[in-house]
Length: 480
Image (cartoon, rainbow, N blue to C red; front, side, top):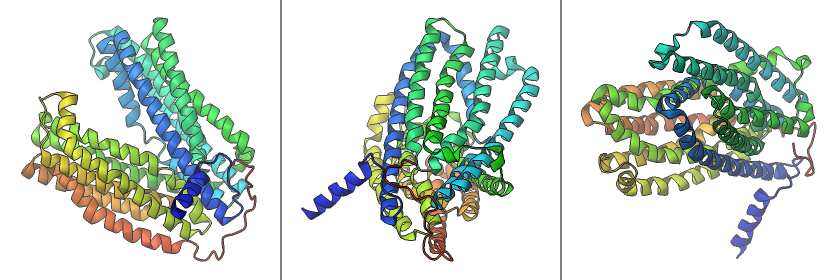
């Protein structure tokens, strides 16, 4: 009975709408859990709305555009996705820096980080805009899109211009969402972005009804996202007016810190991308393109678990950063144990169920033409569980800014993973790439991560003494 009452009280504390008093360690602990819970719930809702809008927009636009022009749109989206690292990791650097300022309750420092981060992002956007303006007239669009009609190629070029402009504009605007995440207020950006997706869907429907071109469809699909980000900015600076950027708060030291963090995050992202995206390439090169589907289709099933855990674990990153800045090592350790238990508690039963039900799910989804070996399904289940254990570790290391060691581990592990996957695929077939990932993660990455985490946790609070009193203490009536 006492356990039930305690559990109900804890649920009430994390689900209440009124913020906790963050002028005390106890209140800050509850407030972190509350914000993490709200952010996870908002992210899940936003992902569900994005899926629903996609289910409506894909058949709608495909029927309207036809196979060729719809294919052009997907190619354009792939180009932009490939440029996803164009911010050089600066966005993640801004988030960590703002989390540090939040942990110090230093409004001036937070504004300096936001102002300096915005200047860096504007610089990247200007460089990309100039490069695009120079290159655009010389790009052989007919050959790039591999279409026969010059008119179709010209339409694709105009659509690319719209999409590229959106991409460039969104780079500096991303400072808003990163600052929100650093303040552990990402639930606002997730909620508003979900509304932006709905707005984009309404725009697509309007363009289809008005018989607009592909370029107008692309504009409608992106306008809602940009509008949502601008609205996010209004919410952030309304609640935290002291964070509003100004050129007078541009600081070289802030730029140096953000840029240094950003480059480390950038290298880390690239190394991780090699590990997670090379499997299909290895199979295609070793066994042929036809064998890729045997691995890729069941792998898609298990990627659902990774997506779910990524949504759930992401809010812990800025919370760790803020708590570590305050020297609250006890909370960091406790939250890390919770996150590890939750991650494995979700992954183990789901991965086991997918391994058992995988053949039936695949048969229903794609028919009897594809046969996924049971050994492959169980290997993917083991890989999913190991990845579930590594997610909380990565978030903790990101929050503690243990990036040098994490980046070095990622580079070494991705290199070994690639070589081992190639050798095992030659010897064992498609299961080889999965076994290579399992070995690398279980025997190289995770043990080294544990060592780095142990060292980093021991450094929290060293030389700080007691956590400093807040310069700008928040009360339960404040939202920022």
